[in-house]
Amino acid sequence: MRILVCDDDEVLISMICFKITRDKIGEVVKAVDGREAMRLLKDNEFDLIITDINMPFHSGLEITVYVREELKRTTPIIMLSADAPEDTVLHALKKLGVNDFMTKPFSPADLSVRIKRLVEK
Image 1 (spheres, one colour):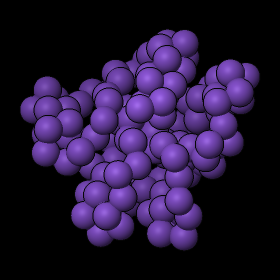
Image 2 (cartoon, one colour):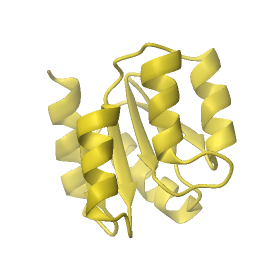
Image 3 (cartoon, helix red, strand yellow):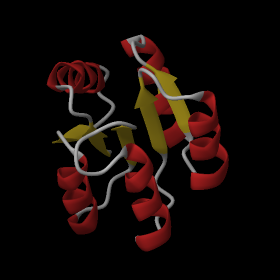
């Protein structure tokens, strides 16, 4: 399984990559900002996308719209944020097609469970 992890916090990306690799879930491709994420999504298919809401160049919300509306993909998306307002989270889940949402900081074990739940459907 190929997982795209998009976040401008490189320490968080490293933690996520370590957990996914340690749990033998799949291969991780990293994007440190929204522009890099969009480029990777245009040229590659992924089995799962994990994205922060707030990133330079393009937000996680914009990435979700790009995946769902322009690329027409149903790739599961887990959105992350430390400070997203409730209405933004609900909009992402109900209107944009985000599959799951996690508030930072979060447990790596919880992330692993959520990944497995989404990809086993």
